[in-house]
Amino acid sequence: MPTEQSPTDRILPQEPIAERGKEATTRTDSERAVAAVVRAIATEGHVTRVEAARQDRGKALREWITVFLLGLAIVLLALLMVGLYWQVREMIAVYGPIRDQAEAAKKSAEAATRLSEAADQSLLAVQRAWIAPRLAYFLAEPVAGKPVEMWIEYRNTGRNPADDVVGEFKALAIRPSDFDDGSETRSKMRAFAEQCQAYSQWSGGTVIYPTFESARSYLVGFKLPDDLVDKDVAKGEKLILVQYCFRYRTFEIPRHSLVCYYYRKGVSVRNNLNLCEFEQKAN
Image 1 (cartoon, rainbow, N blue to C red):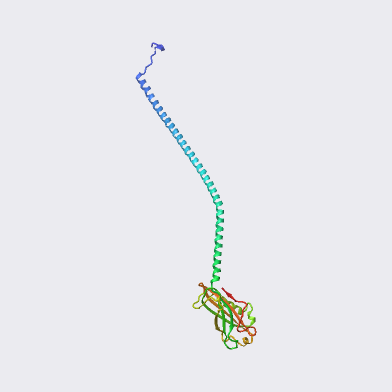
Image 2: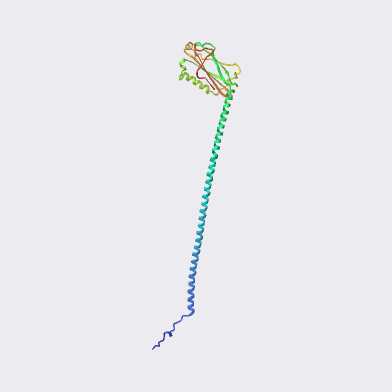
């Protein structure tokens, strides 16, 4: 029979100590490796968090700096606008008197110019030549079918010679009713007057010297058309109308004197013809 042994008498098999030490060392190395990895991960996470925090602080700082600079720019712009506003106000305040002074100076200059022009015109009017007809006459009493010779006496009442003096005339035989305004005769007379004053270019002519200090006069004579005097003119039923235009220059400026005479038998005298009541012009 097998012999029985007590529990205390049992001896369990024992692993070798070297094997146990080796197993413990292996476990320790693995744990160390895991711990190293964990520490590395933790360290990297910490570094990442620190870097992110640093970047956040930098970003926040840049944003604050940007906000500050923007606010400073707005303040400076506002100050600039205020400065410009006051400068504009000062300019407006100063411009008013300057403008008034400029307007006053302009008006003074214009008044001086007008005064100078008026003085020049006055001096010119005093010193210039003036051709002034005195009277007109026929050498003989008009007879039907015969030519009539007419003379005009005139003077230079100015203080300077009249240069390039020439003249032209227009003669009509009309009835007294043709003198009415709006008639064909008046239209012809007006046309001749406008032609006289509009004429500014001509050549030739004579020089008429001043006569204001003497009784001397000048004469111009011309013949009227042969068929102008008919029986009606000879009987006084028609009258003879003569316009004469003097053209001359004084101080190189064209001037004109227009005169109108008429003769009616029984009313006029041949040696002192009547002046018309219209178309008497001079410039």
